[in-house]
Image (tube, rainbow, N blue to C red):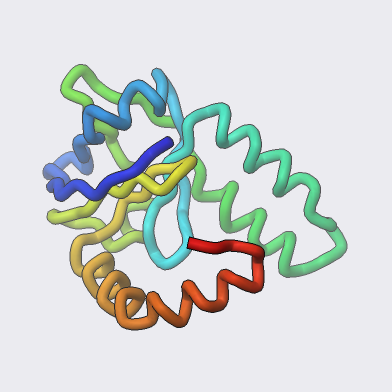
Length: 145
């Protein structure tokens, strides 16, 4: 399981350090793709396989299902860490997530997320204000804190 928040920088070559506590769980290769809310999702290969099966099960005749599958798969790329624990993020993914210098690397259960620091701070502040409302709505999904 991935958890925690880490502040990092992206170098001029588009590389970001993956926190040491995430590296073993990510494995020797992993998948980086466009995520929701303008961040990047990083999946270990095993979790990527689970996502792939879920997306394959979506009905092909539904335009929303096709659109989401295209969005998710077209941005996906297999990556590896270098000897310093960095991943080289492709330009199209950096552009999508507006990653240029300062970033935040989050552990979110079965995946890692990479955010532009400014976008993360804005998202976090908005979510923090609505946290109680969000928690109340989760009760509808049989979720209790």
